[in-house]
Image 1 (tube, rainbow, N blue to C red):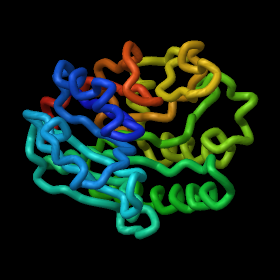
Image 2: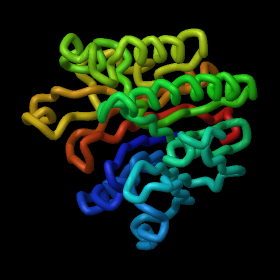
Image 3: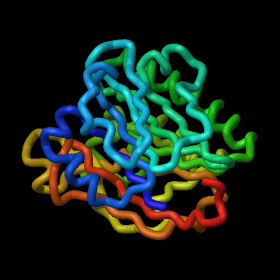
Image 4: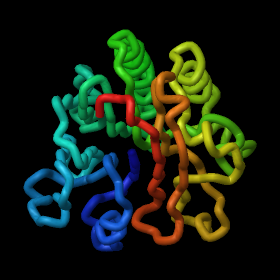
Length: 260
Protein backbone atom coordinates (compact mmCIF):
# COMPACT_ATOMS: atom_id res chain seq x y z
CA UNK A 1 0.00 0.00 0.00
CA UNK A 2 1.42 3.37 -1.03
CA UNK A 3 0.75 6.43 1.14
CA UNK A 4 1.72 9.98 0.17
CA UNK A 5 1.69 12.98 2.48
CA UNK A 6 2.11 16.51 1.14
CA UNK A 7 1.78 20.04 2.47
CA UNK A 8 0.45 21.86 -0.59
CA UNK A 9 0.81 25.42 0.74
CA UNK A 10 -2.45 26.06 -1.13
CA UNK A 11 -4.01 23.22 -3.11
CA UNK A 12 -4.98 25.53 -5.96
CA UNK A 13 -1.41 26.80 -6.22
CA UNK A 14 -0.06 23.23 -6.22
CA UNK A 15 -2.52 22.32 -8.97
CA UNK A 16 -1.22 25.13 -11.16
CA UNK A 17 2.31 23.79 -10.64
CA UNK A 18 1.35 20.32 -11.90
CA UNK A 19 0.68 18.41 -8.68
CA UNK A 20 -2.34 16.51 -9.98
CA UNK A 21 -0.59 15.55 -13.22
CA UNK A 22 2.23 14.11 -11.13
CA UNK A 23 -0.14 12.40 -8.69
CA UNK A 24 -1.92 10.51 -11.49
CA UNK A 25 1.32 8.59 -12.14
CA UNK A 26 2.14 7.66 -8.54
CA UNK A 27 -0.09 4.60 -8.00
CA UNK A 28 -0.99 5.90 -4.56
CA UNK A 29 -3.60 4.18 -2.42
CA UNK A 30 -3.94 7.06 0.03
CA UNK A 31 -2.96 10.72 -0.26
CA UNK A 32 -2.95 13.01 2.78
CA UNK A 33 -2.78 16.73 2.05
CA UNK A 34 -2.26 19.62 4.44
CA UNK A 35 -2.62 23.38 4.14
CA UNK A 36 -5.23 23.26 1.39
CA UNK A 37 -6.07 26.92 2.13
CA UNK A 38 -9.43 26.79 0.36
CA UNK A 39 -13.11 26.35 1.14
CA UNK A 40 -15.10 23.48 -0.35
CA UNK A 41 -17.00 25.68 -2.81
CA UNK A 42 -13.66 26.79 -4.28
CA UNK A 43 -12.72 23.20 -5.11
CA UNK A 44 -15.63 22.19 -7.32
CA UNK A 45 -13.41 21.66 -10.37
CA UNK A 46 -12.89 17.98 -11.25
CA UNK A 47 -9.13 18.19 -10.82
CA UNK A 48 -9.60 18.56 -7.06
CA UNK A 49 -11.52 15.27 -6.95
CA UNK A 50 -9.27 13.03 -9.03
CA UNK A 51 -10.35 9.56 -10.03
CA UNK A 52 -10.29 6.85 -8.75
CA UNK A 53 -10.12 8.41 -5.30
CA UNK A 54 -12.76 9.09 -2.70
CA UNK A 55 -11.88 12.67 -1.72
CA UNK A 56 -12.77 14.52 1.46
CA UNK A 57 -11.75 18.04 2.41
CA UNK A 58 -11.86 19.56 5.89
CA UNK A 59 -11.74 23.36 5.80
CA UNK A 60 -10.70 25.86 8.42
CA UNK A 61 -13.33 28.37 9.53
CA UNK A 62 -10.92 31.14 8.54
CA UNK A 63 -10.92 31.53 4.75
CA UNK A 64 -7.68 30.86 2.91
CA UNK A 65 -6.09 29.21 5.93
CA UNK A 66 -4.95 25.75 7.00
CA UNK A 67 -7.25 22.85 5.97
CA UNK A 68 -6.54 19.16 5.31
CA UNK A 69 -7.73 16.47 2.91
CA UNK A 70 -7.50 12.74 2.24
CA UNK A 71 -7.88 10.91 -1.07
CA UNK A 72 -8.44 7.14 -0.83
CA UNK A 73 -8.92 4.44 -3.45
CA UNK A 74 -11.16 2.60 -1.03
CA UNK A 75 -14.22 4.26 0.48
CA UNK A 76 -13.61 4.66 4.22
CA UNK A 77 -15.87 2.93 6.71
CA UNK A 78 -15.96 6.11 8.77
CA UNK A 79 -14.69 9.69 8.56
CA UNK A 80 -13.67 11.58 11.71
CA UNK A 81 -13.20 15.35 11.60
CA UNK A 82 -11.18 16.83 14.44
CA UNK A 83 -10.13 15.60 17.87
CA UNK A 84 -12.81 17.27 19.96
CA UNK A 85 -10.85 20.40 20.95
CA UNK A 86 -12.38 23.50 19.40
CA UNK A 87 -9.27 25.75 19.13
CA UNK A 88 -7.61 23.02 17.05
CA UNK A 89 -10.65 21.76 15.17
CA UNK A 90 -11.75 25.23 14.03
CA UNK A 91 -8.53 25.42 12.04
CA UNK A 92 -9.20 22.21 10.11
CA UNK A 93 -6.15 20.24 11.23
CA UNK A 94 -7.22 16.59 11.81
CA UNK A 95 -9.01 14.39 9.29
CA UNK A 96 -9.20 10.64 9.90
CA UNK A 97 -10.32 7.85 7.56
CA UNK A 98 -11.10 4.52 9.20
CA UNK A 99 -10.86 1.21 7.37
CA UNK A 100 -11.62 -1.75 9.61
CA UNK A 101 -8.92 -1.67 12.30
CA UNK A 102 -6.74 0.88 10.47
CA UNK A 103 -6.88 4.67 10.84
CA UNK A 104 -5.20 7.00 8.35
CA UNK A 105 -4.92 10.64 9.44
CA UNK A 106 -4.04 13.86 7.66
CA UNK A 107 -2.60 16.08 10.38
CA UNK A 108 -1.39 19.68 10.26
CA UNK A 109 0.16 20.90 13.48
CA UNK A 110 0.34 24.67 13.96
CA UNK A 111 3.54 26.64 13.59
CA UNK A 112 4.74 28.95 16.32
CA UNK A 113 7.03 31.00 14.12
CA UNK A 114 4.70 34.00 13.78
CA UNK A 115 4.98 35.05 17.42
CA UNK A 116 4.66 34.25 21.11
CA UNK A 117 0.87 33.79 21.05
CA UNK A 118 1.02 31.16 18.32
CA UNK A 119 3.89 29.36 20.01
CA UNK A 120 1.81 29.21 23.19
CA UNK A 121 -1.07 27.78 21.14
CA UNK A 122 1.31 25.24 19.63
CA UNK A 123 2.39 24.04 23.09
CA UNK A 124 -1.26 23.78 24.17
CA UNK A 125 -2.00 21.80 21.00
CA UNK A 126 0.84 19.38 21.74
CA UNK A 127 -0.52 18.77 25.24
CA UNK A 128 -4.03 18.06 23.96
CA UNK A 129 -2.77 15.96 21.06
CA UNK A 130 -0.63 13.85 23.38
CA UNK A 131 -3.74 12.91 25.36
CA UNK A 132 -5.60 12.14 22.12
CA UNK A 133 -2.77 9.93 20.86
CA UNK A 134 -2.81 8.04 24.17
CA UNK A 135 -6.52 7.48 23.61
CA UNK A 136 -5.92 6.27 20.06
CA UNK A 137 -3.44 3.67 21.30
CA UNK A 138 -5.95 2.40 23.87
CA UNK A 139 -8.43 1.74 21.08
CA UNK A 140 -6.06 -0.98 19.82
CA UNK A 141 -6.24 0.38 16.30
CA UNK A 142 -3.32 0.56 13.91
CA UNK A 143 -2.73 4.07 12.58
CA UNK A 144 -0.73 6.02 10.01
CA UNK A 145 -0.54 9.69 11.02
CA UNK A 146 0.54 11.69 7.99
CA UNK A 147 1.36 15.32 7.86
CA UNK A 148 3.26 18.46 8.59
CA UNK A 149 4.18 18.23 12.28
CA UNK A 150 6.13 21.53 12.16
CA UNK A 151 8.90 20.05 14.34
CA UNK A 152 12.31 18.71 13.35
CA UNK A 153 13.02 15.96 15.84
CA UNK A 154 16.80 15.66 15.91
CA UNK A 155 19.88 17.50 14.57
CA UNK A 156 19.93 15.09 11.62
CA UNK A 157 16.54 16.47 10.60
CA UNK A 158 17.63 20.00 9.68
CA UNK A 159 20.69 21.54 8.11
CA UNK A 160 21.54 24.37 10.51
CA UNK A 161 20.48 22.79 13.80
CA UNK A 162 22.90 24.74 16.01
CA UNK A 163 21.57 28.09 14.80
CA UNK A 164 17.92 27.02 15.20
CA UNK A 165 17.84 25.76 18.79
CA UNK A 166 15.92 28.86 19.92
CA UNK A 167 13.56 28.92 16.94
CA UNK A 168 10.07 27.44 16.71
CA UNK A 169 10.19 24.00 15.18
CA UNK A 170 13.40 23.01 16.97
CA UNK A 171 12.84 24.25 20.49
CA UNK A 172 13.93 21.91 23.32
CA UNK A 173 10.32 21.56 24.50
CA UNK A 174 9.16 20.57 21.00
CA UNK A 175 11.93 18.02 20.57
CA UNK A 176 11.18 16.60 24.02
CA UNK A 177 7.56 16.15 22.93
CA UNK A 178 8.76 14.19 19.89
CA UNK A 179 10.94 12.09 22.20
CA UNK A 180 7.79 11.14 24.12
CA UNK A 181 5.91 10.47 20.89
CA UNK A 182 8.58 8.03 19.71
CA UNK A 183 9.33 6.81 23.25
CA UNK A 184 6.70 6.24 25.97
CA UNK A 185 3.77 6.82 23.60
CA UNK A 186 5.13 4.04 21.40
CA UNK A 187 4.73 5.60 17.96
CA UNK A 188 7.28 5.06 15.19
CA UNK A 189 8.87 7.42 12.65
CA UNK A 190 8.19 5.33 9.52
CA UNK A 191 10.70 7.18 7.34
CA UNK A 192 13.57 6.54 9.74
CA UNK A 193 12.72 2.84 9.83
CA UNK A 194 14.10 2.51 6.30
CA UNK A 195 16.21 5.63 5.69
CA UNK A 196 18.80 6.67 8.31
CA UNK A 197 20.65 9.09 6.02
CA UNK A 198 21.28 12.75 6.89
CA UNK A 199 20.15 15.70 4.75
CA UNK A 200 16.77 14.17 3.93
CA UNK A 201 14.51 17.21 4.13
CA UNK A 202 10.88 17.93 3.23
CA UNK A 203 10.70 21.72 3.63
CA UNK A 204 12.88 24.60 2.50
CA UNK A 205 12.59 28.34 3.03
CA UNK A 206 11.89 30.40 -0.07
CA UNK A 207 14.78 32.66 0.91
CA UNK A 208 18.45 32.50 0.01
CA UNK A 209 18.31 29.63 -2.53
CA UNK A 210 17.67 27.26 0.37
CA UNK A 211 16.18 24.54 -1.79
CA UNK A 212 18.95 24.73 -4.36
CA UNK A 213 21.52 24.39 -1.55
CA UNK A 214 19.40 21.79 0.31
CA UNK A 215 19.31 23.91 3.47
CA UNK A 216 16.10 22.33 4.74
CA UNK A 217 14.10 20.75 7.54
CA UNK A 218 12.40 17.36 7.82
CA UNK A 219 9.08 18.33 9.37
CA UNK A 220 6.70 16.14 7.32
CA UNK A 221 6.25 12.65 8.75
CA UNK A 222 4.35 9.43 8.50
CA UNK A 223 4.06 8.29 12.12
CA UNK A 224 2.76 4.77 12.71
CA UNK A 225 1.65 2.62 15.62
CA UNK A 226 4.17 -0.05 16.70
CA UNK A 227 2.22 -2.84 15.04
CA UNK A 228 3.15 -1.33 11.66
CA UNK A 229 6.86 -0.92 12.40
CA UNK A 230 7.79 -4.03 10.44
CA UNK A 231 5.42 -3.19 7.58
CA UNK A 232 7.41 -0.21 6.24
CA UNK A 233 9.08 -1.23 2.97
CA UNK A 234 10.34 1.85 1.11
CA UNK A 235 10.36 5.62 1.58
CA UNK A 236 11.38 8.53 -0.59
CA UNK A 237 11.05 12.28 -0.73
CA UNK A 238 10.09 13.56 -4.18
CA UNK A 239 12.28 16.54 -5.07
CA UNK A 240 12.46 16.53 -8.85
CA UNK A 241 9.67 19.10 -9.27
CA UNK A 242 8.41 21.77 -6.89
CA UNK A 243 4.68 21.95 -6.19
CA UNK A 244 5.08 23.76 -2.86
CA UNK A 245 7.73 24.79 -0.35
CA UNK A 246 7.29 21.21 0.93
CA UNK A 247 8.08 17.98 -0.91
CA UNK A 248 5.79 14.93 -1.05
CA UNK A 249 6.81 12.08 1.24
CA UNK A 250 6.03 8.66 -0.26
CA UNK A 251 6.06 5.47 1.81
CA UNK A 252 5.17 1.92 0.77
CA UNK A 253 3.74 -0.47 3.38
CA UNK A 254 3.13 -4.20 3.41
CA UNK A 255 -0.41 -4.22 4.80
CA UNK A 256 -1.76 -7.46 3.37
CA UNK A 257 -2.73 -8.64 6.88
CA UNK A 258 -4.33 -5.39 7.97
CA UNK A 259 -8.01 -4.69 7.33
CA UNK A 260 -7.58 -1.69 5.06
